[in-house]
Length: 319
Image (cartoon, rainbow, N blue to C red; front, side, top):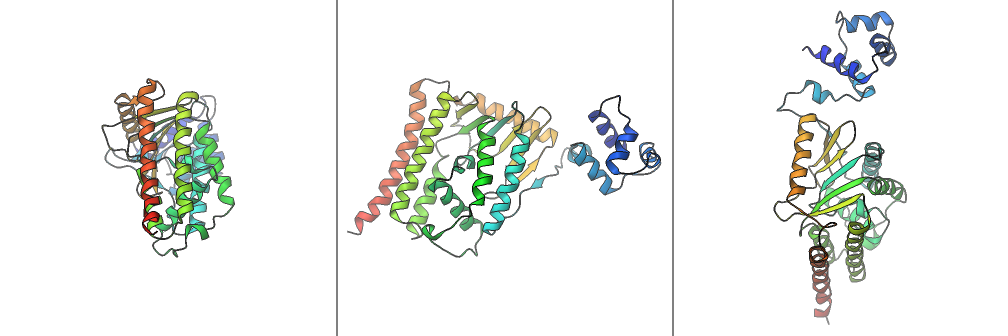
């Protein structure tokens, strides 16, 4: 099938049979009935701009229509080098996730190599620390200010709350293992040892991390829209998949906060199936016995205590 025929077939599937395809395309492209008829009869071709306009209007993936199986067209998040870039990143992310999760039937899958960033959206000291870490690691030219002197714009909270709300009102399936909390702990230790984080705040951050672990355990037991799976068989990768009635959308990390985004049908279905396989090979902590659940969460708390002891022992050595 020719490309123009493929696009027309996809548009036809998006509109009721009672609606005229010629009228619909004429309205979207703001062209005459005759001009629209010539395109549908393939006497003239859609321009690139017209093709993109139609695809956006009818929510059609050009990737799915025109790419071969070995190629995937992706969108990507913006690159972050400054605090302003980070603000734009969270603004765009909040808008995108909010649109994808507005349907109550939406399901979200997260392969948690690190604690999902949605848990750092509540304005606590850990929220500020994560922004501090991200900016330091993403911008090599960032001036090395201490955490105590780091200032974050208030407008961040608006977008963070949007992300948090979207996550909390969606059916969520998270897959964790025993290393999921490691990077957060290592970041606290690193910036403390680098002299960019004082002992008081290092302790406060570990305490806040314990709060998140306890919150997750509570969600396991009391939130019917939340499921946590413990997988000790494979390495996790921070992939995220959002499943709606209309499509699957995959978020694949390529930097600390950078994601490639695609709704390529075949790729997303493969990842969806892989998530289901991971879940099958995992322990559902919300449904397992209290022993299995406590073993997992107690290991996480003990790991935090280990880092707390490591940080505070360095102070003791100075006296």
